[in-house]
Length: 176
Image 1 (cartoon, rainbow, N blue to C red):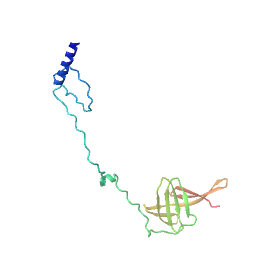
Image 2: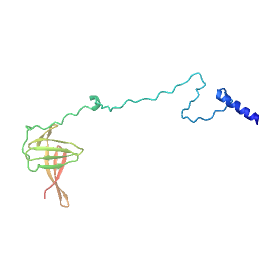
Image 3: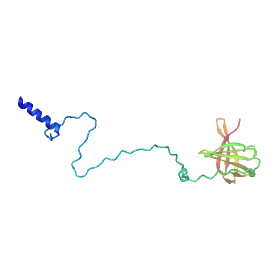
Image 4: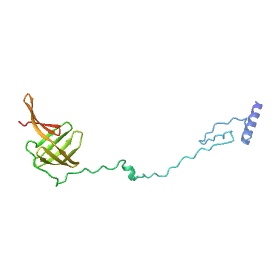
C-alpha cells in the first residue's frame, strides 16, 4: 500500500509541476473555449473572416431610356379631318352591314365607320357619286368603283339585303 501512495504522490507532484508529458491522460475541460491543434502540413489555411454588412439602404433605380422601351413608339392613329368631303347617303344604304371580315356603317349625313372583326376600326366620311363611292378614312382614301344593293329571299320568311362593294358582300336583315 505504501508503494501505491508513493506512486500517487509522485504523479501528483509531476502533474503540478507540468512535467507529465504524454504519460498523463488529459481530463476533459469544463470551460467553453476549446482549441484545436494546428494541421501537421507545412501550409496552413486561415479561414476567411466573416463578412460584415454595412447597413443596407434600399436603392431606387432610375430606368434608362433604352431599358424602358424595346420597340419604337407606334405612329399615332390618323384621324379623319373635319373638312373631309362628304355627301348625303341614300336611305337604302344607311345602317350597319355585316361582312366576313368587317362591319361597315353609313349615316345619312355621310359618316362611315368600318369595324374589323379581328379588332380595330377606321372611320371617316363618304362621297357617293352614282354607282361609285369614295371613302375618306383616317387611314387614307379608298375608292369603291361599283356598289349595289339587292334583296334576297332565303325562304322560311327570312329576307335580307345584300350590299356588294367591288365584289365584297355585306348583309343585313330586312326590317319588318
